[in-house]
Image (tube, rainbow over all chains, first blue to last red):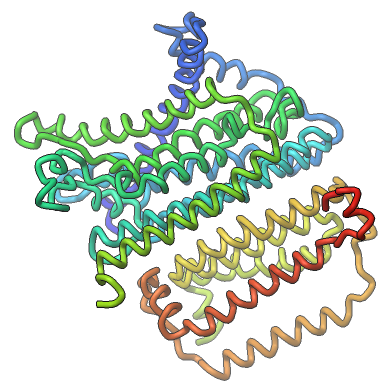
Length: 368
Length: 183
């Protein structure tokens, strides 16, 4: 690896980290503001214009607050758990391509932390690592409510991970028909969603030429299942039994305070954003969109893809907030029933249907 | 190749380090006095194994190992531990007195496997091209050349699943059924 390439990798990682931190801080504010609007309140309004600096103020407060360590904790695990929450959260976003590649001199810079050959598998592996933080925090607190929160989180994560993975398989299989062979690289999956569905059928061409070639149109069922599963994976309402205040105080983070609590909080909001970004990448075409090359100035065309990516991701993030403001929390048996009796059979059924359609289109009817 | 020549290459330092971590945490799994710690040390051992696979450019196997074993199997272990008993601190009852036979058995298995692979390959380097092994290649060989073993393994897993349900399920006596009690 030559020096320019090395600096490009450093640049990519710093840009991706920076983007993630900025949007996460904005997300916390956006959630409070949107929830407030939906409930006819004002929300944060004092720190900065429209209260936009409220999260920074809260973060500063938490940073200088005393981190109380209760006497009965298992110290090593108790200190380690918040880090285990934040690290996978950051690593997941490293896989997401968030802008069109551009050139510096004769070196190509892809706007993505790292483009792994097995990117999707890495995302699944990291999202299943996140549950360790919750279960270890619950256990090491040496207290009953956190332990119950940890156990709930484990059961929930295992249940919904399966549905999430199966929905991903359907997309990967569909995406394999859109280019040369199958791929698990997110950059490649995004490339294959550029353009429109215009060439699908000559009769519908006038309409379809305005429909972008996103996976969401043929894979709408997988998209719905995937979205429900990521809401459950991030422990958000209506699946927030892990930290149900009315039942088990704060759940797994009851015994945490100060900066350690802030890290759990940060991880949750990073996960909301990066899971939405993955959904946007797999189903909504990632950074694809009209860039008007040659019409608009060069730098506008270069920035537009990132704006499209953020717009699509924020649409999904908004859905998260909207769900929280609308739906009451599920009961525990309802949560398990939805996961095991609806989502997983649904995802398996959809996988079979989409496999049949794909093989029919590729090989014709079996009797031919 | 002598040991001093082998150790002078930086990549082998990493191999040595990861290998020692795997060995040490594997040893601590069986000696740990706290069952949660033992499960976590198993995570360290498996993570080290995934690291070894990464060093062999087998990305797919490495991340599947992380996904399946660290992300699901050990999480289920921890889940099982926590819904039954989850003590913090030391648990003296965890130490088994029958140590010698399992120790001999595992050393025997190790010797057998090491001898088998040395006998089969000797000093030939297997697949040392440096290119990552593609997922496509693994898929093709699993559903092509190895399709029958693959299906047999999945059949064994299905049998294990049904067996565990049968073992865990408690059949109701006729009186209990009349009372309408649920399992």
